[in-house]
Length: 242
Image (cartoon, rainbow, N blue to C red):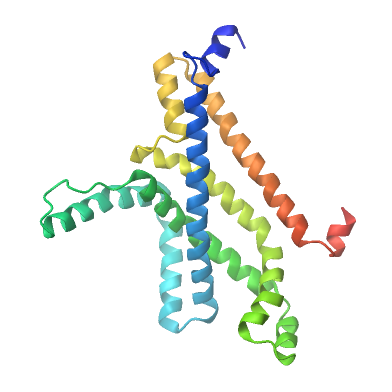
């Protein structure tokens, strides 16, 4: 890499280092928010499919089917542009005038990706529950454990141990899907990289840097998930063998 490229990627007055770092931070925050929304929705979805009334199970099945069948980018468009139209209609209804309220691109993107991730996380959690030996759940009930104590002592720790690897994959998907939020105007990594590439006419350099940023985020967070997996496997034969 020559001195000119180092200058462009540096933190000096001519460098793009600071704005790329802010964009990477935006990507990370957006991904965390979307994953958290997906975790809440996925938990509710798994609960509905496992023990909810029939209409609630149908609703959960419909949610999963729609989120898995509709392209991710279309979901983001529906939330951002459709949400803007809905908010404008409400604003006019309450006498605020057209264009009085704008939809925040970050919020719309986080909600859209969270909805997409929630469908996947729900299936992961449902599968993790079914992987728990039924005898252990029955033993907890026979021992007099209430619903919440049974969940805390048996279902949650064993389900989490099974679900973590697949939840790590869901997290990686959320990071990659966050790049789609650039269509809403949020200055995350991909949008900032595109601006830098257009401004400097050095697309290969900046898109390669963008790939490195995403790789750094996914690799670093992957190490966190692996550490969490190791922690949940403490005392298990598989954990002692490594």
